[in-house]
Length: 423
Image 1 (cartoon, rainbow, N blue to C red):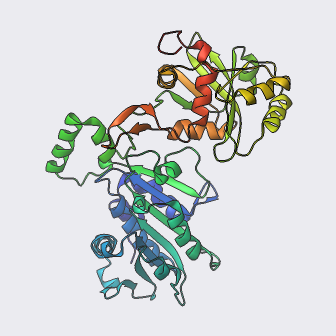
Image 2 (image 1 turned 90 degrees about the vertical axis):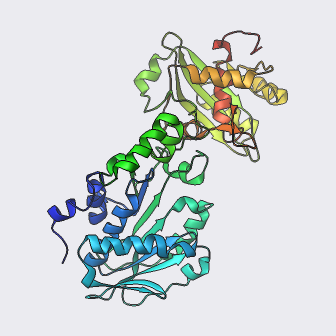
Image 3 (image 1 turned 30 degrees about the vertical axis):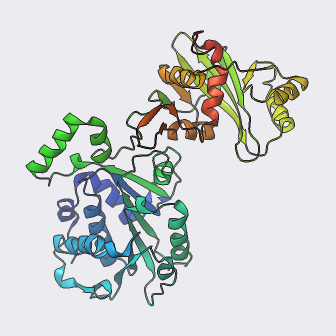
């Protein structure tokens, strides 16, 4: 017998109540949710609350469940024991039977069950066949252990391909502590504003878990005092990168047509690219008084010829405002100039990259419209500092996926202080 909603609220932690409402209904404001991403710091009770919801769904629905970890040897002492504990918390010990050879948990009154697989042998997952009840509930525990998104996608494709009976839908749980590096695929996918409609994001920390002992809380507070960056990562669940977050001045929001009509201090730039690296053109407004940069349009893409780039710039009526481009390609600059575009090469010098990045970081705000400039928003959001072979942070940003950042440096060079460092 399932506990009443009042009883469940005493078992599911308060910070997870809204998550359970969406999981149970499968919708949020009539939008179907398939993926439930539970991220957060250590001791945040992510796994405990997911396991409770998982068991409840097995009781409520005529479906089977699948629990996955990257390494199969870790299943028994992690998700298997966690689900057994959830059964006890719910007072359902007599309703389930748990097997160890192989790992399996069966709901006795209906006969549906939970099976366990390690992704170290993907074929075992792809070849899963279940009779009577479909696999419709899946839990990827510690999804950050997977090296690539493709590994996870292959498994999801093999599970989600089946058409479910009416009234049944897929529910896929992902749980993890965010990796430190912002460029990790998990962070790039879920630590962003570009979340697809079928995904529900939930973030928790130890502060949401009132079951922690005084000794644990003391240890956490000691780390907070001694190493705030490590505290933010380990217990806050924040991908801190090298410890210092680039561009803490970012603001993502729509920039209205009315605002754009008032912009009178236009800045434009180009970072060249073609085969692998994309070409990037940006248009912005620099509010010199308030030290705010508004980036409100982009042209961005691979295998874009100079002719195509020129046509796209002129089609927008941007050819008369000066463009400052990467001076490494004087031939490209000459081609655009011949097509009637106002353009010049950027002045470069020793330390200009670091200086330009520091200047951008020192602005009071960099406002980016993610609808108009999705690639720019993504690059600024996900960039991190380089690290040396010992993992120590350098004073320079990573030289990858930074085309819009380079473009922003070029287009604002006349606004930067004319120091010996830069020129």
